[in-house]
Image 1 (cartoon, rainbow, N blue to C red):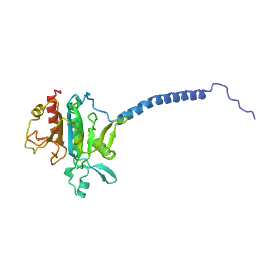
Image 2: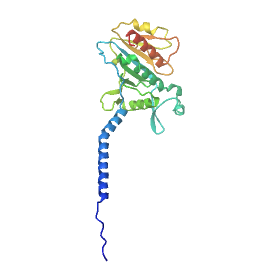
Image 3: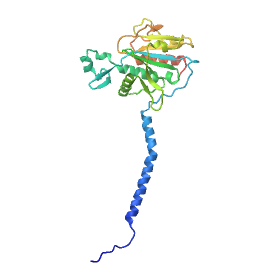
Image 4: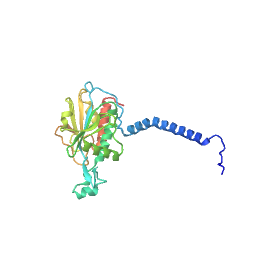
Length: 269
């Protein structure tokens, strides 16, 4: 039997494989070049970026310090996970443990912190420090240039992480944006400062703009505002205890008035 001979000609298949191989190599190079950019974008997405503010020298300029007292920020194990307690999501859990759900309002501290950090006072570099003290006595510092999440869900996650790990550091940086500190808060306050507490129950009703305008320019302000739903702050370390409205104000509303008075005093537009 005669063996059939194949017709000689170009082998297109092999050449097509070469073309395919070149395309694969080219696409692999493109992926390699784009990989660092994708990693960088992922890192940037998780980094807590700061609010742009003007730098200032605390030694040569005065500023303001805010202390939020009795903030309702408490962590508990609900089911199998630890969560930041709030009256909306954990009402049944709080009732089973003989606690009043109305007292668990971490959203008040969230709104108050945003009111301080978003103010022109902070963006002009006049906020020297922000401290928050919880109902359980835990004291932590919030850096003036940190950007707190706008939504409560993300804020709750950050507070949960802070109270468990005691600090939060920006990705790629060593700076601690939030950190738990030792009590008392008075050891961190400027020496030449005037400590002012606020409460609707105070008999001293003043106009905040006139009040801060009468204080000397070389004095630092320390404002103590309650971040709870009911009750009043402790006035053990305050120099003056005042009320700035004839009507009850929320913590965020009170802070807005305070910042407005200081911005008028220091001509911050």
